[in-house]
Image (cartoon, rainbow, N blue to C red; front, side, top):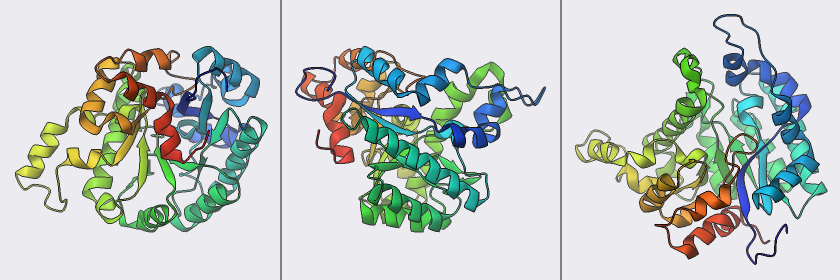
Length: 329
């Protein structure tokens, strides 16, 4: 471990890129199109060199981890940049296998510092299930990252129910990270990241709850990026709608369902982490950085959430992620 702490600091949210997969998908991604100002020129601008190096170069990654006080990173394919869902399913599977092999290879090079998540072609649930099983059983990856929707299909759609049933049967940990919101309104003021991503997380939570996935598969292990998006901080209106009888298909307040999810801490605001702990419990929060794009002082951010008891903050730094992923470190 990087330090002498008895409990390692685990960063649950860290991006990795496969150069081959990235080359095939970035030009199709929401962020690639928005970054190029597609509405005006249609030109796709490249990923900044420094960010790409951090997603691909292991030595740079380890040095950054040491600087941030992170002992272990949970690396996942950067689905914002290399989502395969818009491709033909067979081609998507080919690319996902390359990406998952790449994650496994990186973990094998630094098994004391890295833990891997895979990704799957969600546009074809049967292929997604098969690749999920390969990733966790053959490659030893500890879970799967998926986007907040599958093209125009919400995560609670009946088409995807076989995937969720198999996830529940296997006990696979799922990390939901948006692949971007294509609404052209987000072009103005660079709103894709600040507004679009937490909005996507809210849609995903709403679908999983209202479309019945959480009722049918109550044992699912699902974690959301970026503090869970908007809903955890605005539950009153959702609960009011349920209590007035608008959403009769669910069995309890939305705020109660939120306690079934897990969350990482990339909110850039200690007060929001405190509020999240009030809503869902500190034991459902894990440290995250959104490496290499987000929080560069993650330990300090969590420790500054002073309304959370010190012992619980210590668990947020590592123990909660270890439990969620079934790690023995």
